[in-house]
Image (cartoon, rainbow, N blue to C red; front, side, top):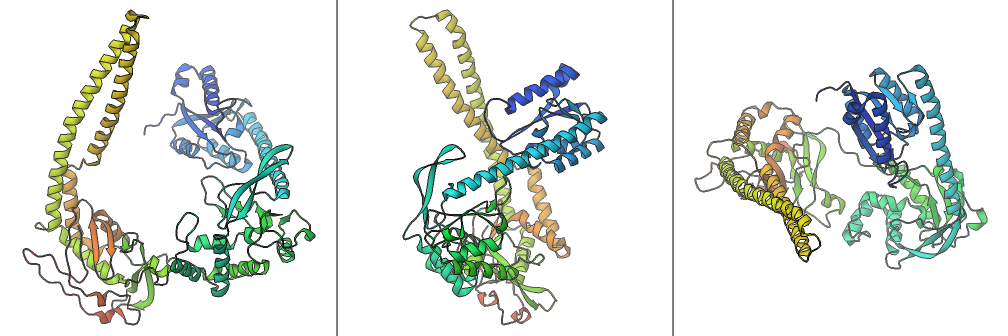
Length: 594
């Protein structure tokens, strides 16, 4: 991209769409008018506009702002113009860092509302003063929001959103909060569904394990509100939610000790209702929801009954805290090559599981394990694990064979090339015909529009208008079809050079794969392998750009199990049989679907 040192960027932001006042469009027009007055019409026409609508000024993590800064760092702009200072940020630290960076890049920052320009020392000083007040305003707004939440907490109302499992949201009355009348909702138990969170708390109390609870729920085929299987994460979210807790003296003491903001006196915690906790999570746009510490919570008494005794809920929290150090952590480094590509025949992904043993060559022993098998403790899937060391080596050997001149894969590539070439020619003919039809219709429409002046208010006018509408609708359909054909042509446009490049890559793979690093092998496999499906005995390998077929192998599944009791070096050598002219290649690794 060429540098444009005379370019000017205009940035606008609004937290939500209103269509009036300081809207995105109004901000941009005012900025352009400023540039026009200061630099001339030519600069105003060349301004590049960046817009973020629906984003807060609390930080700089906004898509168009980030795009603008990338181009600023590429020295494409001499200045950034905004309508008002807080359109950039309400945070003093963010703003200070931005001004420092722009100064180093020799890029001016102009705010037209405050009439500040960082190209002058006084302008820079005033910018920092104003940004301090912007941050003060933001903190004042945050304080006001928290005060509002206090008033809401006193009502014990449900604020909306998806009701937790076991409850449904029900409108009950209108309440007055902060001088405004609002519709009030409360949580009402669903009798059958309310047994699920009780069951989860009981199972965790028995097992002290999220994994064990997950396995039991899978075995019982218990589903979430959305009809999905429970995971450890959804189970933990339920266990940490105080909405299920009976509000009694123990509950009050728990939250007071952890410095939560408790809105009701101790005597109100009499065991007749459940807990409603506000400000539990940080749900900043574009980021993963984060559970805030209990000290940030606002605790109120809900209008719903608690489902879980307070002692049990508190014991579960203590257990979850203890078990943090035991939680599963995926190994950072392993030798597995098929991670992300290998699936169990049950439909779940398989992941590499490292053991503490080594092969005769000193390589770590690993197996591919079905996630559903692990999660359900063999209740929903009991297929044997795949020996990862042998499977990866066999996949590499099979890919080496793909580049052979007489391989089925090369033959299919040639067939695919002919098919795509033919398809492109057919698409091109259809495309030309549709483009001609579109042009002809447009010509007719323009002629009919011109004839309206002569028709005037005669009885023919409605017919002319109707015909214009019909042709316009027809052209919309033609235009849609043109776009479809253009996308199909683009998707299938595999040139002769691309096919030749793939063949060359496969040839290089055969001669150099043994010297590749693990990362390079993974990348090479992903150029030709779409996915690998393990059925407990055979591996089905699905390749890119190939038709579906099968290559059967002898059953050597006794060598494919995880074999935790036996070292890998005792598995013996792998024999490869010579293929017959009409038979498929033989290997102990099952079907090889192309």
